Every structure is written in structure tokens, then in C-alpha cells.
Image 1 (cartoon, rainbow, N blue to C red):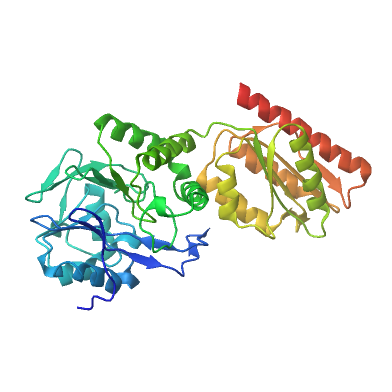
Image 2 (image 1 turned 60 degrees about the vertical axis):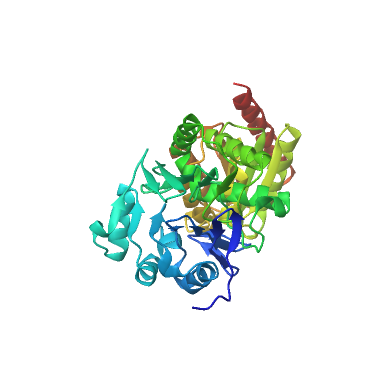
Length: 405
């Protein structure tokens, strides 16, 4: 077998054998501007184990990396921490090529793998909380983390090396030849970890809280956290930072920040948005103004991750909001950011339903609605723009009140 792709040693007897996807730009509607990695890990214990696999098209890359350090047929076990196809897509081919003694997954993982690949359930052994796998000189311990982010999700812990294989938790979509977080520009790490949480895990925040508490109670010493996407955390400062960020993001406490989302037909609603944003800033808030002709839905939800207010505006077209606004509203609804002050606005010609529909949608999302929709007929004049400024000031005061209350 080719050894063109090489494994990367991350600790004594532990190797990264994953794949780099430089070209990935869309992940279920999430804009992955910097690509991604699909991380798989090989533990060269007396009984070697492969932890997770990679997306199906990258099978050869993974097998090449494995072959650079061990004959693949010598691997005795495969562990599937997460059954989603970007981590299990080549599992059937890996099983066929490696012929492991056993494959392990959580109970829900066993079901998911059977449903995905029509495997006999008996071919996958179930492990759960407190179970361990004897690797001879090393061992693996398993902790279920259901809904972080699928029902099958679990993590594996290598106590002798103090490494947590964390599946999708603590990861990011970032293609890189660097394998460790501390080798990469911190500003990129900060943004991509936040974007990943916002677009993948935000709606699962209550489960994240439970999982963090569960792992904390186990009091596992951690020298390394190895996720299934992106680089590996290996410094104590880095590990503490990302765990702390997850706790903060999942709590979703309101902040003095507003996200203004808009789209316009002839520019009137954008003019309104610009003045509303100035009013919000004058009222003491940090503001992100996001025109959907220039912004992607996944960047909007990333800005909302640490926001306290959401203000959405749309012109009316065909008695409804513009398609780009409807798109981002559906995306926000699915990811369920909480604890937001909210309001709607928009310019209209003769019917003006868009801002009303937005108000109803934001109300249905259980946000704190501060005021009725601000509706301006056709092109806003000076008086109308003053209304927009006062609208922003009113929302700023309500947001600051929510933060202090």
C-alpha cells in the first residue's frame, strides 16, 4: 500500500492518520471558507486501535497514513465515536481492508452504523459509560455524550497519555498542515471555534452543559484534546480556554451587542438599517450590520453567538419578506440562539407584510420583543430616518436592561 501520505506523531504511540479537505466550502449550508480536516487517530498499543475514520472519498489518504507506521492488518480494534458520515463514511471499506477483531461504538452508534451501512448489529460491539477497552500496555475508557452532537456521540479517553478523543466537541472546520492549535494564528482559532460552535452545536447547548458537567465530575487529567475536525489542543491554556468558551457559549448570557440583519430591493431598508445601527451604537451597544446580499447565513449565526439583540429588516416582495431574509431566519430558528432582545423593520410600497411576518417569527422564537415593527413607506425621508435612530436607541436601552436584569 502507498505511503505517500504520512502519519503525524502526536504523542508516544499515538498518531494522527486523518485527511485534509482543502476544497470543502459547504457543510450542510455552513460556509467553510478554510476547508476542514477529518481526523482519525491510531494508537500503537500492544493491541493497536484506530479511533474514528474519515469521509468516504478520503479512504486512501487515511490508509496511506496508517501504512506509514503499521501494516493496516495489524490493527485489532476500530472505535467509532460518532457515526456521522464525515467520520464513518469509509468505515465499511476500513473494516474490509483491516479485518479488525472488533468494532466498538455506543448503543446508539451501533444502531446508526447499522442503518447507514446495513451492517449486522452483531458486528459492532456496544460500549458505554465506565466501559474500558484493554489494549495490553494501554487502555481506552468511554464516556457517552449523547446529542453532542448526535444521539450516538461519545468520547474516548487514553489515561496513560491523558488524551481525550473528543469527536465533534472542541473542533473546527479548518484545513491545515499544522496539527496543533498553538501552531496557528490565535485569531483564526478564535473565529473558527466560535463559528463551529454556532453553526453545529448552538441548538444543543443544554446537552453541551450536561456533557461538560459530566466530564468535569470525572476529573480527567488532560494533556491533549483531539477532536474530529481541525487541529489538536495540547497546551493547558488552550484546553482551559476552549472548555471555558464552550461553557460560556452554551450559557448564552445576553451581552451588549446587536446583530442587524437586512435585505433590500432598492436600498431603502438598508438605509433604515444603517441609521438603526447608529442608534444602537449611540445607545451603548457593539453592532454588527449584516446585509444578506453580502453576508452568509453561517456568519450571521456566528455573530449571534455572543449577542444580546437581533434586529431584522426586509423590504416586502410578493406580500412577504425577501428570500435571503427568509433563508437566514429559518437557519436561526433551527440553531435556537436564546436570550435575545428582538425587533423587525422594513420599507414597503403598498402592502408591507414583511416586517409583520418577521415580528411574528421572532415572537414565535420566544425573543423579548421590545416594540412593534418599524415600517417606512417607500424611501425614508429625514423624519423617517430620525424614527430609525430612536428605534435603535430604544432597542439599545432594552438590551442593556436585559444584560443588567
